[in-house]
Image: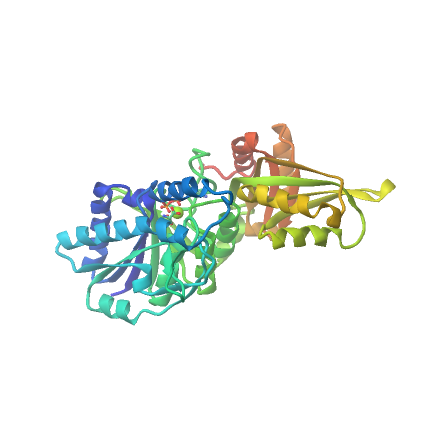
Length: 415
Ligand code: ADP
Ligand code: ASP
Ligand code: MG
């Protein structure tokens, strides 16, 4: 007998038929003698609908940027519905089941509403309930702060709920069911011959997720890695009896070294800002990054082009698309204090990245990447690298072309 956490995303619980199907998958594990906790997302589209309601109301005010605790209160509601529906579907099968909201567990978080971080989960009640053979159906994505307000974990946060609950309950397995049958070399919606990986290391998955692969929320991978809990990603859509091996996200193993590049990720959530004729003297970049952090804007890629002749530099950096206006307002407000002559910005850019732990020990990877992009006439605006990734910023019109070109250049497709 094992203790298992099973997580089902929005498409997997999109309607009552799918919920009945999920109940069948949970039943199979329970009948095999396992203790089961299930984590569910809202029905697909529901969270977007709720966010749009908040945006529409918030747009009535002059400060559309205000996200407060009521946002979380509203958008967390989709998961309440699916957890209850699945609990009923399980009861109809003659199984013992009950739903759990974030506060009932309780899953405690900090106060960063809309993107809260989990601060702790202690759940003797849920532990007891599972031991008594009752299936726990948890509303993902939500938690509670120490002042008893509902919080949410950021978009895609049910993945993180599932991993955190698996860690807290000392589960033997954490299975993340979704609408694709594993982690692919790139988004299979863009590249039809992308290949499913049997395994991927935590480190690579962390990079892919943070560079835009939405299949797992970045924090869920971080949490699994820190607690050494392998995650299996598999499909909830497999037909009865069909093999469903999925992908194991786990510690690095030797055979993984053989591939140089494991995957290609892309993100359209990018915007580029260039400060023109910034004075070229020590401390200028620090002033810019300080202005951004004071405005709560995360700066990602940075490149400086210096013209030695007149001691002026152009500084280009990227921020999240949603932060562009906030960033521009903050920069304009401190234009004289920082000391630059003008600003250019562009939110028609995408970041395309290659990731692989094999890059540590292989040369020529950058060359293959830049040649592949050049052959398609794709201009690279900004570059960022780390030990296991190279990212480029390009015109967003070429996103899919670049992803396909890199996927082919590194021979990632199915044989
Ligand atoms: P869920 O609703 O189950 O949480 P998501 O939509 O959040 O599912 O994540 C699954 C989607 O992630 C897939 O449909 C796929 O389009 C996308 N995706 C992006 N990159 C990858 C990748 N490398 N491998 C698999 N899926 C990916
Ligand atoms: N329902 C939430 C979202 O759409 C959480 C999740 O699906 O993981 O972002
Ligand atoms: Mg998701």
